[in-house]
Image 1 (cartoon, helix red, strand yellow):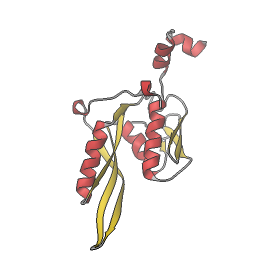
Image 2: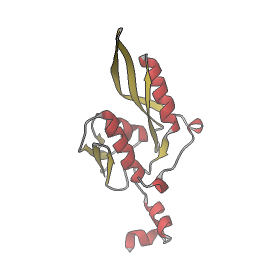
Image 3: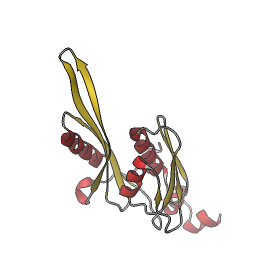
Image 4: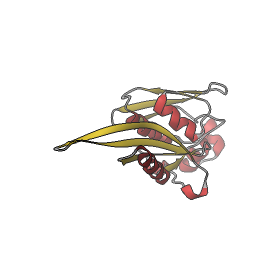
Length: 172
């Protein structure tokens, strides 16, 4: 992951909406029987280019979700969005999860499944073609999608990094 592209955002300055992606009940077997706890993966975003994800674990479902939201607010990133879609095609990878995110014309909508849809809609992307290529595990898919969004660069950033004029990026 290119660390120079990550733009951290302070959560106190913005209004965030949260989405529960997945909740799992896990059991620890002890001498006295099974002890159940819950893990929840949550995505938060302002639907205007800022998104983050978090994992919460607790004995109760509501506590797990609250912990996940708090964790997500600590890991916010800024995503470049141009005309409601992503600037270019990008692959993302985390562990066994691999995703493909492609720009789409206006009116297409978010063509993505489950965990990817939550991340893309929370980021505020209105039109996108997305495909999960590897694992269907929601944890890996969410992290791979965020990886793909972190790698996105808009034309202005590319021009700045290369030290050239914005027109030269497009016209050579």
